[in-house]
Length: 359
Image 1 (tube, helix red, strand yellow):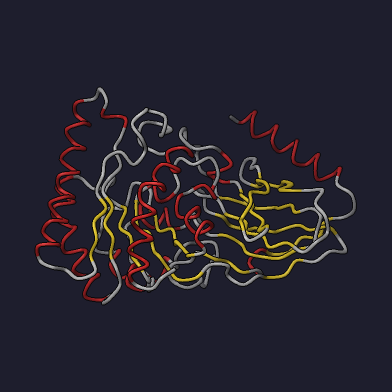
Image 2 (tube, helix red, strand yellow):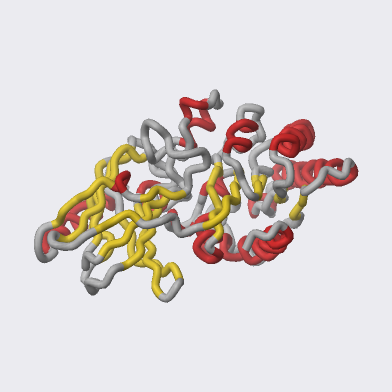
């Protein structure tokens, strides 16, 4: 893996050195940052929430230091876009590409559609790369997604000398907050822009804010105020993969009641856990997952029986398909799995949103 990262760094530096003209770097934080759940943090602007404002379990805080779902929005007429960035040391995940974990992912809007343009390939902890080059000098709207699973400590965007880059208005409207597990967080898409909240945002123009919390989306009491202060137009709870069946049974109903009381009129959508391929031959996991799905259905039944207003449940077990091609490791969706998941849940989500005039 270190050999791969070294080769990537050599390639990136060679590309930089061979580019025509000089490169001028600007702080990415001077541009528009989209995706924060609760305002922009007063400290590191690339944290998803200001963790100093909330008393969070250490595992939750660690994941919210990662800028998953955050993106830099800017306009430029530069024929080339480069980047320099730093991430804190973190082991590479076996089920995650280095580009997704600590790289960058660029999209440029063309004819009203966000089109993939290039990636920032990471090296070790300090990175420098050409993201895209040899473009024309027309003005372009850019959306640069930040790493999924590494804390970002600095980011500069480079443009060719003699050209300009300026902040762009947030391209998304409304606020759909997704609180979830590593799947909502983005594991295991190939790039950060392939996480399903990001894909839903680009395809719809509605802002799906990523509060996925890998391994730690367990409906802890400490999350209540974070979600309330996120001021969502819709709240999606896609956290069923993380808690045990016992935790689902004990926490789901009071969790929804607390949010319902403090977010009147806001639709709350509970999504069933995805089917895991690990259950195919492992009887322990098969029983555990069956118990979790049953607990989620029972919690949804209780909430509906209580006639909790504006509560919805999206059930199902085959979000990722049944042909064994939809996951990276038996649990986390690959790009195909995310595509299938979106095809299953998006029509239901948008149907609910339309009932509230959100389009």
